[in-house]
Length: 118
Image (tube, rainbow, N blue to C red; front, top):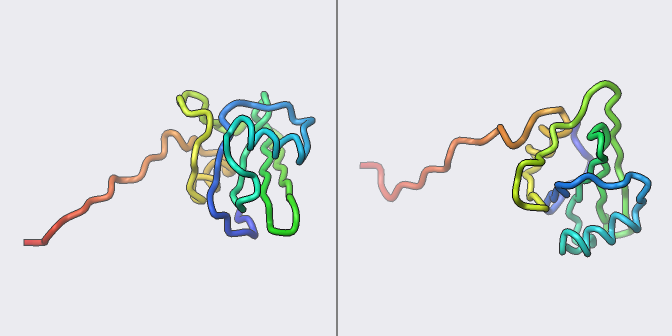
């Protein structure tokens, strides 16, 4: 699923949250628990305890928007065995997460830097 915005960054909140929390509560969590500003245009991703729902909060210069996805018969492969409470994701990793892939297992080849070719 492609989103209709071009985010500056994508941040994932590792621990599950109470999904009764709305925009104001999520924005407060971004500031207090993630130590980030919710007004940057970045995407902030949250899940519930059952990992069958995802909320994505973002600021689009005119107000906050909140996107919700609910899985009917599966769970998101949420990265839980990581030490960081906040993970920075690429847009591709976000798409993989929303499609059901375990992003902690998907690693790209390392970048190579050469000074010369011969």
